[in-house]
Length: 423
Image 1 (cartoon, rainbow, N blue to C red):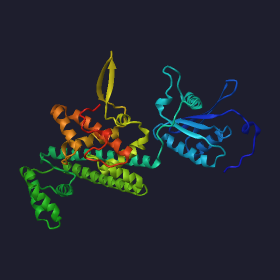
Image 2 (image 1 turned 135 degrees about the vertical axis):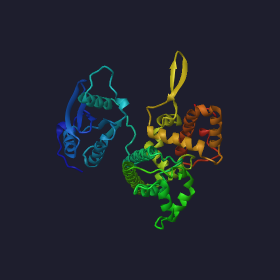
Image 3 (image 1 turned 30 degrees about the horizontal axis):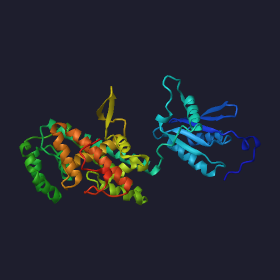
Image 4 (image 1 turned 30 degrees about the vertical axis):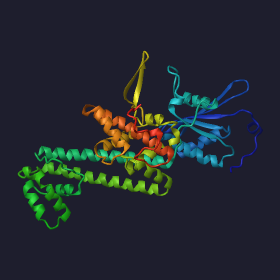
């Protein structure tokens, strides 16, 4: 522990100091606040950089006051480095202190008042001194890494979809429009790579492809099964520009697919040292519509289920419930809440689509799904998906709370699947 000489004015003072910090990407505004026995405020502010030298200067600025709490807002990811630095310093410091990372909504200023970095830092220090701030979601850095990986993976998947659509559009301009052309299949990309290397018609290249002994047998067999899709376009060919465009798109598609595979390997490496996380992910993946990939992503996004007092709070955070609008004593249910986690909202909505359209195994959830679809009809299918997404979110909450796998018979009263009501 760091040795420090005794100072009468500092070590025997009865004044308790607090530190509020307004954190930005490149700088931190810090405020030391205290109130003495005459009810007069002591305020001292300073600005520091967010690099390591700046953080050390910040700690040198505050340590002579020994604040009992550091308060800051959760500003995206910029506060992560500050929290890590303060946690490391707490191990070696000569006094103990709390680190409060509050929800920005808890520290919002009064509308119409002046607002800038110095005022924000003073306000945070005063709030924490009066016990008005509480810690928000705890920062678990391995879960933050997983979130970053999954969000990058979904961006790559969107880019892959965009490239596949551009390839189809280029083929459309050439008049080649086979139905059900799936660019996720390996043989399809292999076939297109060969087709763009020469200027023959589609029919001539197909015959050469079938007779080429260097082509893998599984690719030739796949083409035989799908040959009927190409027969009506055998007389067509691609221009040199169209071949160049498709070549570039295929190269980009393979590159982004490789990047996505690398991210999947990184997820596996992170999970090797987290058996509890793996177990919870396995339990979640037993819920229909939720894959192993989605289960780990859900756990990374929510952190701990203890943050949510009830399934209603959890479902609201996931964006799987409607907004409630009341006026003149009447209550209306509006669109789903957009001020929520958009990634969880998408995951549960996609799970609902899978349960509605692809799940074949009978369970209480499938029976509930069939009743909702029958009641809403084809014209309100998206509304039915939203209702079922809310039900899956409710089941997810119960599974995480009770640390159990999904039971088709629904043994838990809290997830009562025989109820048709969403609310």
